[in-house]
Every structure is written in C-alpha cells, then in structure tokens.
Length: 331
Image 1: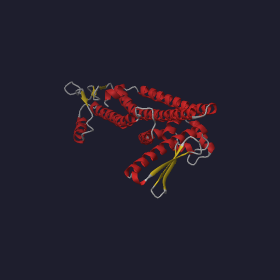
Image 2 (image 1 turned 90 degrees about the vertical axis):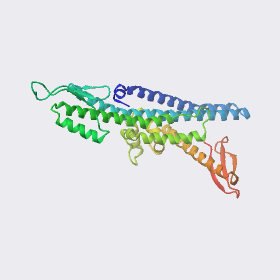
Image 3 (image 1 turned 180 degrees about the horizontal axis):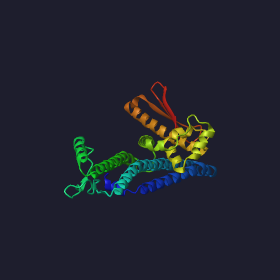
Image 4 (image 1 turned 120 degrees about the vertical axis):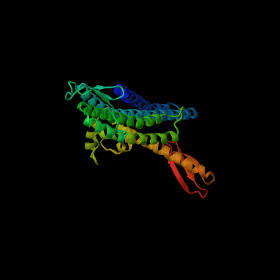
C-alpha cells in the first residue's frame, strides 16, 4: 500500500462486494430452509421405499451444501466489512492531512512527499527557498536529523511540511497493516472444488470464523455490545437497535452468543445454533478420525439408525473391550 493507492482506493466497491456476498448468503439460507422444512417433508408424504429414501438423502446433502454456502459467504461479507472499517479509519486520516496541506498551499506528491512554497523573513531581498520533504519515520536516525534540519530551516513551512509528510506516512502504514491483516484471511475463505460438504469443511469453517473474529475485533467493538446478562426484553431492544448489516455480521462472528439470547427471533437463534452445531461436530469428527487413524486396531465403529429422525446415523466408537469411547449423532 502506498499514498497513491490509498488515495485512489474506492472503498464503496468493497462495501458493495460485502453486500453481494451477504445477499448470496441470505439466498442460500432461504434455499436450505425450503429444502429442510418443505421439500423433504413433501417428498416423505408423497413417496416411500428405496427411491424415497435415496431422494431424502440427496436432499439432505443439498441442504448441507446451501448451509455451508450460507456460512462461508456470510464470513466473506463480514471480513469485507471489517476490512472496509479498518481502511476507512486510515483513509479519513489521510484525507484530513491532505486537506490541511492544501489549505496552506502545499502540494502532496504522488510518493507522499510534501512540497512547500517560499516563506519567512527575506535575506538580501529573497525569501527562504521552497522545498520538498518526505517522512523519515521508519529510520529513527534519519528522522532525528530531518526534524533538526526542519527546526532550524529559515522557512517555517519546512516544519509544517514534515509534520504533514509524517502524518501521511502514518495513514499509509495503518492502511498497509490492515491490508496485510485481511488479505490472508480473505484468501483462506474458499471451499473445496466439489459438491460434498465434509466434516473437514465444517472444521475449516470454524477456523475461518475464529480468524475473521480475531481480525474484526475493532469492527465488532464499533457495533453496540449486547447487554450483559440481559433480560429477554433488553436483548430484543438491543437487536432492534442494530442495522440489518450489523445483525448479520454479529451473528456471523458470534453465533455461540446469539444462540443463547432469549428475546431474539427464534429463527435467528435456531440458525446460529445450527451453525455452531455443524462446525463443532465437524471439528470433533476430524479430531476423532485423526485419533483412530493413529491406532486403527484398537477401535471398532458401530452404525445404527438414529431413533430421533429414523434416517440419520448414530456413530459409536468402541475399544476392543466394548467400552464406548466416543459417540455422536449425525447432524
């Protein structure tokens, strides 16, 4: 990131992209709900037998695809919102110092240096000469020398110009740090090139959520915090005080908190809890698979019908003595 790039940066393009990913996330969520709550139910009522069972399984897998799309697109949208928030702070600092420089009739050059006009007391009928300064803040020794030179320069503009150059450099540095922070997080938000949402995919989604949450701490703090130990009424009032964008981003980053909040819409809490369940289960299954792979001869896996749904599978891992070591319901 440099001065020219930051100055020309159109943050609205990133905000528009965030809105686009949020729209895709919403559409994927709506498609998942329609499959879960309408299509699967209708298929079961109208059909039975092996074909119906196969269709049920395929529809459930399709619903998982949409759910994963919903979560990952939500994370991309929130990451872009966090990126814009960080860049806006740097951009505002830059715009403020450029405006101050222009007010003094200074020129901010494409490399971030600042040129200033002749000024001060005349000597032999001439004003102290104009000049150009650049920030030397990254080199403490050079910076100290530059500040000393500006301090004794007969042209008072030299001191102001150096101050502006340093402030420009600070803004560019802040923007660079934001870019370097968010670039790898955004690159990490990608899925395998297939149509199967695996346990590893959900485990990766959990890691992605943690990564975006860590990067978006400042952005999250800008959103009004929920009441601590709030009553259902207080929680509902907090939720209503947020914009649609803030609700979506907070739910994406803190689904564990949203799921526990009495007073919020049941559909919102249910969605948050389903996401936490899918990610936690995926991470646990990946850990289990790695555990079994180390000593495969010590464990056997049993499969049974899930009595709660009639169609899912109960996975139970036992050691040679028959003692259950791990058990979980398929989501």
